[in-house]
Image 1 (cartoon, rainbow, N blue to C red):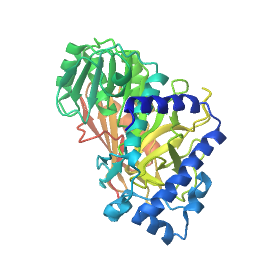
Image 2: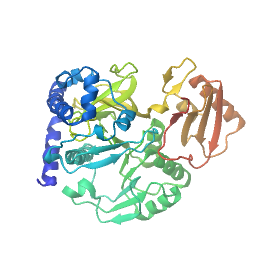
Image 3: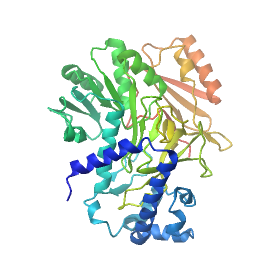
Image 4: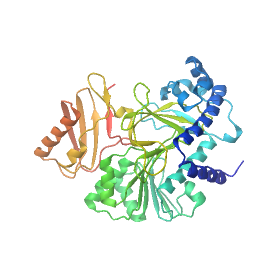
Length: 430
């Protein structure tokens, strides 16, 4: 078997060139890989063959990006129902061994997807691309606060793909579910200059730093695992002087997009994925429009993730001025359950008046929950209790923006009681 380090280096070198390809060249790459992938899964995955047969499609019909639009997107429930028939029964030797990737289950539909050795190599190469785009200094001490950190660790290197190629500074890993106060104490002792953290945890850090003082000298902060709102971006920049860097990935398909340091939009990783943003009629959304993220993994020969509705929403971006022709996403909005619903059944992403509200009182963190068709709960973290006048002013703003009659404001001082990953809006209406 080939040395994985050399393979990652070769993939990364190719990505370094292809980021400057034209849109036509990128689609040519996608068509080339798509034709091979579709035929492979049609011949080796009983579920995928049945799916095409039921839709009166052949592998040739969907072997191009344009032809792929004829295939009805699959959902998490489809994967659950398929069971073992979902997987390829004949995996190429060079794609072995395989690993399992489990979703967090935040949508209520947890699934397990099998990924290949090639998927892992691509994931590492994309990690190098992310570091290169943001020109990170590997000699800095790094703290990582992740869900997969099960115990506290200090090491003499960053670990992961970076340490495969570079000498790095020391590393610190803190479990995500540890108390915020404990995490902050450990940060103060270790004094990282680079930080990888979930947005919900970072919001709690900002509340603490704003109240008690910011004593670190962070030069790089990267969000993982959660959507980022503009209020948090502004707070991070004001307090730390750092632009919050973002990367959009999933356990099923790996790196989906990386934030561009030029425009702060996200560039889609089109060399390895076909990423579509679709409306409710499965038509492509235009720049500025919000839709469902549907992904095709061009290199997963174990699981046919072909037109897979990942359960997220995103807003399509505009062409970027950085010179890269990789498609753009303006924002990743999170899960579809963040869409609110009106009495006529229409759904929409709630623009909830956070910016107007922040002019009335400093808001450290917020979350809105639709409990019924008419009842909205607006959770706010503020430094001090709201005065009666502030409460009434905020209520007027929220009612005007959301157009719902019953809105209840619930106050918190330090941080929101988040169970799992942070979501800025949640709809509980079926």
